[in-house]
Image: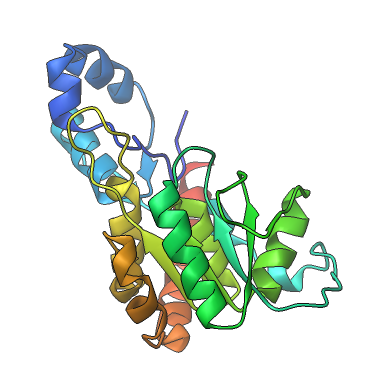
Amino acid sequence: MITYAASFGNTTLDKINKYGKREEIGKLLGEMDAISVRDKNSYNIVNELTGKKPSTNLDPVLMFDYMSSGLVPEIRLKEKYMLLYAYNGRISKKEAKKIKEVAVSRGLKLYSIGGAQPYADKFINCTPFEVLAYFREAECIVTDTFHGSIFSIINKKPFVTLVRKSENNSYGNEEKLTYLLESLQLENRVIYDIIDIDSALNKTIDYGLTDGIIVKERENTINYLKSNI
C-alpha cells in the first residue's frame, strides 16, 4: 500500500495538533509501505509524524505529455482572450474587476473556466480535454489553483498565480502552490495581491529551465513507482 504525489492540502501540523489528530494520522501513515507527496508541507507532516522521509514526486498531470497525445481537441476561436481559471466564490468582485481591466488593456476578452466569474465576457462549460485546449489557445492566464498553474505550465503560457495565505479560518492555497512554483523555478509567477497582476504577466518565463526540471523529476517519479509496485 503506497501513495503517489499525495497532499495534505492546506492542513498543517498546527491544525493536526489543534484537533487532536496527531496520533491517529501518524499511526495510519505508519502502516503505509511507501509514501510519496507533492509538496513541502505534506513532506514535513509525514516526516514529523512517522520519522520517515517520504519521496517527493510530480503531480500526475506533469507526468504525462497530454499536449502531444492527440487527446486534446482543436478549437476554433474568432477572438483573443485572457483565461481566468478559478472555482466559484474564490475570486472577489474587486479581483475580477482588476483582471477584466488588465484584459481590456491588452485588447483581450476575458473567458472563465472552472467557475462563473464576475466581469468575465464568457463562461466556458467544457470537458476536461477541452479545458486544456482553451489553456493552449489563451494569450495569458490568471489562476488561483494548483492545477490551473500546471495547465498553464504544460502549455508554456504567460500566467500568474494568485496565492492566498492560510490565515484564521480562510481557505488558503499557499501550502501546495508556493512549493510547486518554487520547485519549477517559477517563483515570479506568484502574486499575493491582484494589484500586481499586470507587472507579473510582463515578466518573462524560462520554460527551457522548467522543462529540464520536469524531465529529471519524471525520471525520479518513474523510479519511485517501479521500486514500489
